[in-house]
Length: 311
Image 1: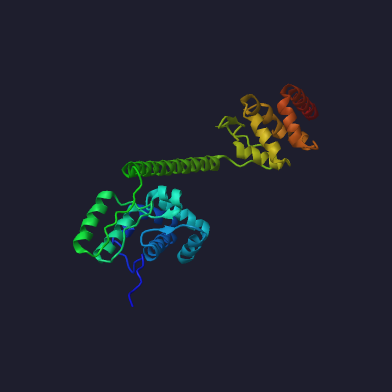
Image 2: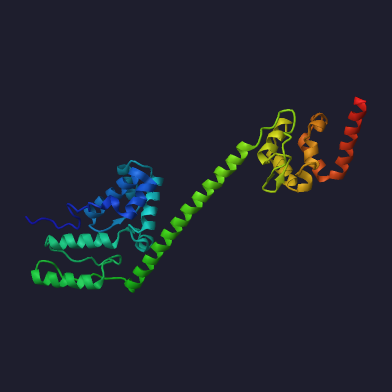
């Protein structure tokens, strides 16, 4: 009884420089062992089942995720990254829901040709091997008399699409490099901010730290940064985040938040006891910042009473 012809292969060669390929290294750097395991499982499935492609659906996603020992969400992220770096053809994936590439198809075609297996070249629209290579294969098949010489159907303007794909891949590589630079700049900025905060003296629980004025992003609070202002507000019982943000927003005006300004006077040790008598200190601070002239009169009156009391 004759053996049943099958499209898949029993083996496929794996290049010894597979792990050194830049595209593969990018998958490895982003997804570590799971990325390499997923990519290897995909190649095995492609060459085993159809020979040069696999339909990507929920079942395939589940099977490969299980073999790679990762979640389905991570598996889909690995596929997206493989497409972005060019391991699979993006156009074919979006158009037909199929994972394949010209390199995979050329490898498949070479194995079939070298093994002298009798078969017909594929007619699918996502066959990517150029017409020149197919004609060469057809001539070779005619000489041996073993392989069918059917020329596969190709997409129109294939060469132009390949050029566009190459340009897209280069653009994505540039975007990836730009993102890396932005991440490094962000890390530097965060380190600088943490270092600045570590140099600011902590606020006393019963008063505002009286250090030299330091301007932080337009906010000058007698030595305090935004974080120090939050600590002072918390110390007097202001916990409502909306109120805190409103105070910070008003305090960014230098005449209100700067040394000797309205907010500086409200949180000063001289006025602290008066402030703590208020039912809602946060609302009172907002009132004072919105009515600095009226608060100034109240503030001066409190200082005068204390001066007379000392006398």
